[in-house]
Amino acid sequence: MDNARQLNQVPPLPCWLAAAAGDADTGAPQPDGDDYAPAPRLAQVLLVEDNHINQVVALEFLALMGVQSRLAKNGIEALAACEQAAPDLVLMDIQMPGMDGLECARRLRAQQRAGTLPAFPILALTAHALDADVAASMEAGMDEHLTKPLDFVALRTRLQRWLKLPEAN
Image (cartoon, rainbow, N blue to C red; front, side, top):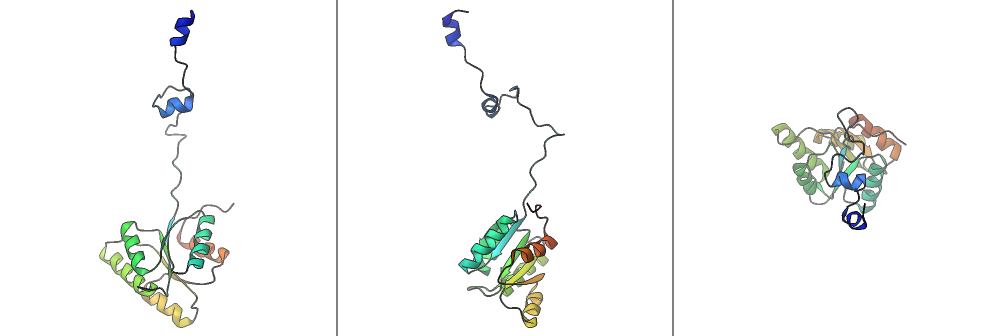
């Protein structure tokens, strides 16, 4: 082959680049129905918390558990977040400015009864641990009542009752 012909030839693309360009015959293994399975969907948790330190701790715990999380800083933001994309579970602080967690839980449950939101568990997350506080949470429509400060193992145990969490490392 002469030099002029060699200069006009384009070398083959690396298989990863050819695949990205849409070339199916790259020599690279191609997924088929038997070998390819999409990654499992991560549980979606909405944390409703107004205290910055509690937000940081809870969001870090959720990330360590392999859960995707969103944050709302009060009940008004929580209602909007649930209407935008219903979570798999809500962790709801009780005392917040604007709209507290009890009122927010009542409104979420009303929307679920009306069929405008799918059902999902709501777990109270509060420093208040008296029997009357637990009763108020349950009366508002909460499924469980967790107390602060948050404990990683206790939170994981509670969430596993409601969600499919990835295996711990």
